[in-house]
Image (cartoon, rainbow, N blue to C red):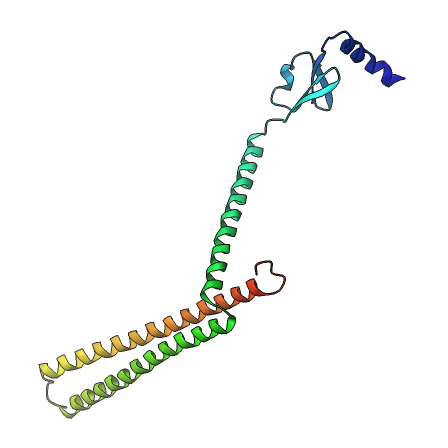
Amino acid sequence: MAVLLLAAPFFAAAQQGKVERVFSCEINGRPVFGDTLPKQCYGRAWVEKRNGVVVHREEAQPTSDESARRREQARQQEEARKEAIRQKRQDDALLERYASLEALDQRRDREIAEIDKAIGALRVDEERLVARRKSLDDEMKSQEGKPASNDLKRTISYADEELAQARLAIERKVNERDSLRQRFDADRRQYLEITSPGSGKN
């Protein structure tokens, strides 16, 4: 009966062709009503009813903290979207580069073998330079009591420079080999991940 009594004015208004508009919001747990939007409702969530039927809902305007939090969430979502696109491209490129895991391993072994061959040649050259430097030391010792000639000093200096350059070249090739192994290890892990059952990527 209470419901009918509350609804009666609205039915009566509808039958008479009248439209009753009510705006309302909630402030500190208490409703505020008005036939126009009350000033207290500005910036808050409010609803508009016509003859008891909700025709519009307005969300509360976010605070500065909420706005900052939403912007950060949007930024993180955009970063995640870009990362997903980047990862998809990387996965596709890896699958295109290697027809199988065996093909990846074969290429790794071939490229590392080429570097090992280059390192071997550099070490042979290093041994030659070490022997050359030793012979110069022997020549220097044979002249004990006599000042070393300028030519011998220049030759020793040049030999030291050559030996240092040879050892630097070896170090660079060893670092190149280590980097190559790390890259192939990363490619192999990624290849296994995207081709494993249930990964959702293959």
